[in-house]
Amino acid sequence: MENIAYVALSLQTVLNRQMQVTANNVANMSTAGYKAQGVLFNEELTKAQGEIENNGKLSMVLDHGTFRRVEQGPLQQTGNPLDLALEGSGFFEIQTPQGPRYARAGNFSLDRDGQIVTQSGYPVASDGGQPITIPQGDTQIMIANDGTLTTAESGIIGRVGVMRFDDEQKLLEQGEGLYAANGEVPTAAENTKILQFMLEGSNVQPILEMNKMIEIVRNYQQTQRLLQTDHERQRNVISRLTQSVN
Image (cartoon, rainbow, N blue to C red):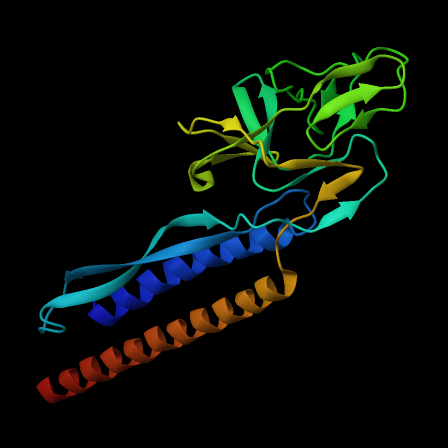
């Protein structure tokens, strides 16, 4: 395969990956607590085929991985007492059958046992790592900025746990808005506020992402035209060589 084809195909592979990530951002622009992702590129130098170019090295582009944009999403008032938003860094701790998981989305509800749970039914943990249960019949649930939860009938019931990580980029996405610690040790997020009756929206910027999709398509088309032009060049060369031999 010609050098130009190697370079073009490596670029198309990365552009395809970038399109997947961008499309996922657009699909989650209304998902509570979602953090937009981006693609990291890396240059790879390989030995050039045929003639010596760039001191015998061929510059390829490779998909090095993805990163999350961790900036705060917009805060939306809902009026639901179990809708909670985090102002600052940190995550709610969620109990799952696979162990503790962490989430920014705070659209919680009560299950039939009175436990505060996620949309998937996983219990939200207190600052002690235990499920938070609202006694049957209690009303007027109030949650302070530090997570202290009270009701009109029972007073203080517990405190919603909020944890932080030194390197949020190392967290692994698990689906359903959950992250695994991936070896990172969580600590209490002392300076993060919990805002009741509110949700943190996605930090995806729709116009930026749509413009990015258009740019990706254009770059892919340009690369495809480059491949087609090179293919025609090779066909013409082969045709002329064949005619000269005949």
